[in-house]
Structures are given as C-alpha cells and as structure tokens.
Amino acid sequence: MSIQKKILAIGAGLLAILLVTLAYLSRPTSPAPIPKISTVPTQVPTEAPTPTDGPQITSSLIFEPLPTIIPKDTFDKKLHDALKQEELTNRPDITISNLTPYSTDRFIVTTDFVDEQGGYFAITVSKVVEEDVKNEVNEWFKSLGLTDQAIARLKVTYR
Image (cartoon, rainbow, N blue to C red; front, top):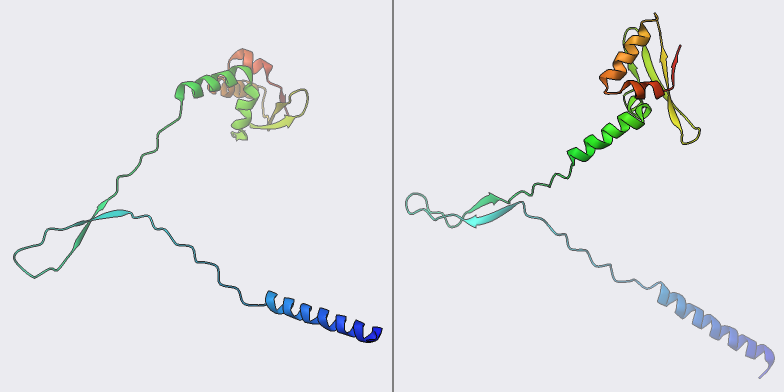
C-alpha cells in the first residue's frame, strides 16, 4: 500500500470519528425536570356539619384563618434615648445636619460636610435680615435639646 493510500485511509477514519462525535453532541437532550411549585395555604379547611333538613348537601368546607405571627419588637428605647443624648452632647453638628435644610421667613440653615481630621458639618445660616436672627437661630438650636456648650462648639457661618 502506498503512502498516499495510507494517508487517505487515516483521513477517512478521522472524518468518520468526527462525524460520529458531531452526531452524538447534536442529539436531543431530555428536558430539565420542572420544579414543583409549593403553595402555602392561607386558610385551613375543616368539615362543616351536615344539615338534616333542607336541601341535600353532599359536602362542604369551612375555612378558618391561620394564626398570624406577630414579629417581636426589638426597639430599645433606653438605648435610643442614650445614643440621642450622647449625639446632642458630643456631636451637635450631626443633630443639626439631620434636620437641615431648615428655613423660616427670616433665615435658612444648611449644612455641608467638611473633610478635616475626622470631619465635621459646617452650618451655614443665610438670608440673615437682622442681627436678632442670630438669637432666633440659637433659640432653634436650644429647642432641639442642644446645650449652650454644644452650641458654642458648632461651626456656624452667617451670610
């Protein structure tokens, strides 16, 4: 047998293997199993008493509601109040920033976060009409529960 015939025979064999492989890979596959849908009953059926008089009833169901589960309240009021008081005392700028923008007909209070050592909120009071507006702003700060010491630590700019 000549070399050309050997090469031709090997090529034909490889072609046959390739065709068999392609036929195997393109065969139809079985469909994926359909997942079962689970349902959650909202009511529990119970059997109703069969009446003795009147129309004949073959069967009936009475539905009673399932008991509802009330989630447990995990809010800790003492902890919340303690954290709020600590914020009023040590970080009055955060207290003010959570309540701004705040405005009246005489002034507007806004805050901007200033990125310095640890950062703080700079409070800007604009639309200042008269000098006594500063007293009104301080009265608003006090109505929020801020002390004079906390107000003194605020970085307030009047424009």
